[in-house]
Length: 331
Image (cartoon, rainbow, N blue to C red; front, side, top):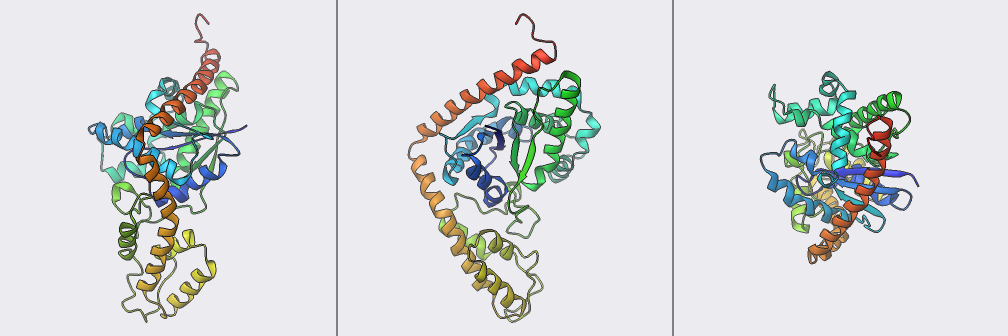
């Protein structure tokens, strides 16, 4: 059975962008692949090193979101990154296979450096996280990586490192493929190009009914539309992007779009219907999450057992890596 590796940084609860970007594919594919889902706490510390408690507190929160969306721990191995030391060892070896210039040229890294305002004071750990992410993906020799569109440059960099390793040491590692969600990128509620925890423009999977409704009703729409009778723009309008992504009634969506363009429906009506759609989607997740919140010991058991399974896979890979690199002393 082929393998999947994917994961999330524990810097906060997961949101609808994560759902369409990767989580839906994880649930769908867990019967077809041997799936590893990583809670990437080491990666989270690259820009949260001064607040480790934040990372620690969110490990369980992310695990709860996994359970809520339907990831089955009996089918999927859920692991904590920092408890797999083989990943750190693999990262060190990969650092020799990539240049500093190449890492800093990575579009995802460039965007995040700009977003975080580092300027020239870039922490080395942060700049190098594409290399660490390559180790995350390859420690279990994953074939497929479900990601959002913004992570494509990271997967390509992993593929480059794998090719370089294999060309030097032999065909040991697997060159992974990326799998993009059905919605390439979900905009933020503020109209920004990306829903992001750090930008505060998210609808979280764990949001209450009232909170989700409030966020929908405050969503950015067409700024040039002053009155409900004014013709409105549908393209790029977050409310309609969300309808397209989550409203199963496509005839209704088309009707809204037609009437919106001709000034025959107001923002309030379209938003109210979107709030209903999203709450219908989120309610089963809230219920599943609530059951696990009542027994956090079960979450800890799932994480402990999943990490142990992942460590076994990592040890198998590292045995092959060390042998290929001629550093399997005394074995």
